Every structure is written in structure tokens, then in C-alpha cells.
Amino acid sequence: MRKAATPGGRSCASCRNEDRAGGGGRPGRPAADDARLHAFYEVAPSDGDLEALARALIADPEGEGIQLIARGQGGEPLGFATVYWSWQTLSAARAGVMNDLFVVPEARGQGIGRALIEDCRRRARDHGVAELVWETAPDNETAQRLYRSIDAREERSISYSLQV
Image (cartoon, rainbow, N blue to C red):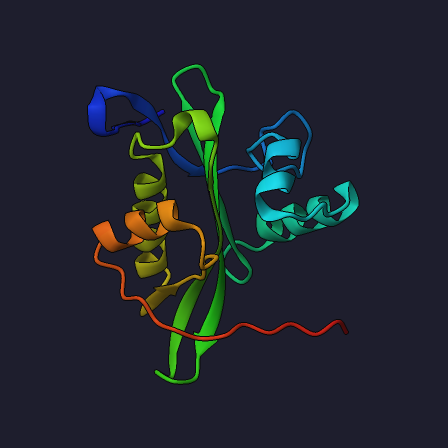
């Protein structure tokens, strides 16, 4: 398995789209510990819903998207990113929508988030995507510092959702 060095000299396993979208012990679970992930996102999707999402990504990574998992030297999950393939009507081009970027708190500040973003960007480019887009909470200043450091363009918008 290829290793990627992170700032500070620490290395972690390169980001991989795994055949079991998880690694947290159960198939279909995100790479991060359930309680920490749910607390971070303030949601608690069911195991069945997360497994269905993971199976869709595994079954059709070219059509649906990918979930990349960054692992430490011992195989422990350090973080993950999920990218879904879509279109942007404003540019009339394919887009990768990064819906998740999560790094376990004890591994933050070591370049793992940056490595995940760069791997998402590379894979999006390889997929023929013109742009990688994502959102973050207005009060997530740690993430915003990371995004500014990689010269990501900040755009202001208001997100809405509607149950169907």
C-alpha cells in the first residue's frame, strides 16, 4: 500500500476508495467513529441508510461517486471524504460534490484533510470533472482556514433542503 507523508513527518496510508466503504468495523459505516461523526454533523443516520449509501458507491463509483478513507500506518481510520458526481448548470460542466470531509480530532492539523482534498481533486480530474465543490458550516473556522490555505474559492450562498 502506498504511503503519503503528511506535514510534520507523520505518514498515513494513502486515501483509498475501499471495497467496503467504511473500515469502522462494520460494512457500510464511515471511517470515523460513529459517535464522533454523528456529534460533528449533528445527525444520526440509521445503519441501514449508511449501508445503502456505501453499497451504492461501491457498486457504481463511476456513476455515483467515491468515498476515500485515510488510514494510519496501523490501518486505523483517520478520516474520510465522500464525492458524488453531478453537473453544474452555471458552468454547464461535470462537477464533483464533496459532501463529506472528516478527520478524527486527534489527527487534525497533520495534513490529512489536505491530503483527502487533493486526492478528491485528482480523482475528480481523472473522472473528467471540471470543478470540485463543497460547503461548510459558517462557524467551522478550522475547516475554512484549511480551504483558504489551498486557495479554494469562497462563494456565498444559502442552502435549503426540502423533505420529499
